[in-house]
Length: 309
Image (cartoon, rainbow, N blue to C red; front, side, top):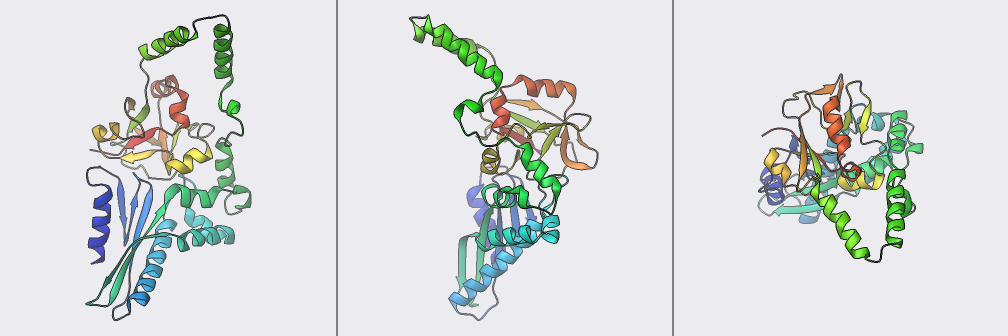
């Protein structure tokens, strides 16, 4: 019974999508939508309350086992934290205890229950693990990783780069002496629209056979230097997006995804960086393409990996 329940739950949310879903025992990781579903099935011949409670506990136990196998980056795993830090162990166990119950089915014939729970990769898992890296003694790399991300801006002005501030100041000066501000702005908008504005990045990695999925996938140059996401993506954006990149099957379907809709630039990397299986290498020409697009595309993590047809 339980396998059918989990199948229909996934079918209801991804009937027409070509999503990247990993089956791990009684759990499934939906990398496209950014969540984990786990089932638990109670023993038979129990009352409804006892059966539901037992099934929930088993589902939570299954969730914990799946979480252990999730990579944060190529170099950082959740399991390493659980094995070496009581702080991380407490945090992870806390979010598992608080997982959302999305389905509870009691079979009156067998007097047993199947309970399905859900955990969000970003707002639940990443936020709990990385919200205060100074307390995480289990891996110094975590603190460095989290510090690489932009601090959430305290003031609107701080969200602009120096060049952007200069542009805004120039516009203000121009408009001060221009009686027809509307016409002036319309001309600017027209010039902007005349150029090709990309709304996202599609990375076709269908030919990279040794790629490893992670919460934070990095884009690096041929020497391994990180290009994305550090110093570009805020903590808030990362946890909201669930992962630093989206995951999908099929170029055409990916183009329609709201993360990159409606005019993404397409790039086809050919390798990962050495043994770092979640670090995707971009050559010089591909990096130039990335650098030519609006920086807000990267800041908003508007990148999708296409894993195949």
